[in-house]
Image: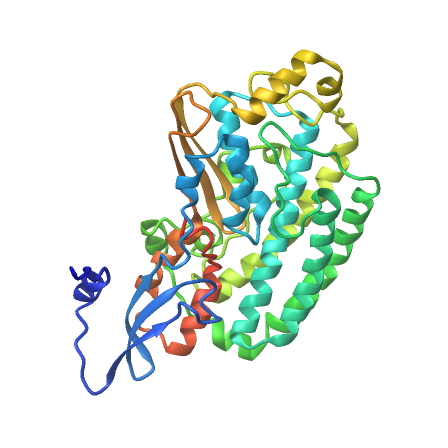
Length: 409
């Protein structure tokens, strides 16, 4: 029987580990609880100091991009939930936006308001999850419980809207499937009125806590040059002093009309990135307050009118024969976008999330590529871990806020 080649052999050859009495090679993961997914870090240690590091990925075996090329466009949308499963709506929206730009679709204003609400609510859910797990990794148990409490309230709102708490599928190509339930805006208002006090509680417990500062300050330094070189985005880029947010640079939905700031830190360390997550939640609250005021002024239409690509409203399907036939064709065979390519970037909670689609005029994408921020933020670990200590590895991985659903695509 022919022996299979060792796929990891080139990795180890490139690492060129030279063993001596004070050097040890260990595996951190892929089942380590603080690896935030199926991350295998091959670390060379001298004592407790990291000398070399190699992130080894591929243990999740997703194949999502290839699945997209074998599903019609609407059929693939729920699969995007499984990428960044902490912020599912941001994935749904990024894919829907790419398809809408491919077919030149204009989304109704009410759908834009609802989508932007869901995106910012999802940002808060994701940031609370980051704070809870990052603090738990470092050793702060109370914050984990407090942050998850508020996250549960936010997930209640998502469940009231779409029926799901984690994998939402709350966005459709061309709009949204549902209007806001009765009383939903009141519950959202109550939530964002309570949340600032809770954020202050988190800050009172952590921001000036000497143990927290000792674990995060000057740990995981990412210089502006490193951040740009590795393709960092989101807080990983803004935490290195570079002000760049796609919501401001290339506005989509209603972000061009909203008043909000982009927090930036020039600390370049894990502590600076933690502070940015706290400030971003405050900005999301500011955005949601503005959207609550916009909602009553919009018309009731939720889906774009484009019979060639989007099914007619349910009332027309139930009463008009042609609308029913058209709906049957779209569901069974799928839409046929024009030939061409498109890339639509969005600002997900973790950074730039974009979908590149090449269409050959078929119901399936000829090629689909997802630009996921966690992939780049995993790669930079080999650059920033050497020189740190083993205890700091957990802190640094946590501060990158990676999720492996979107790394192993």
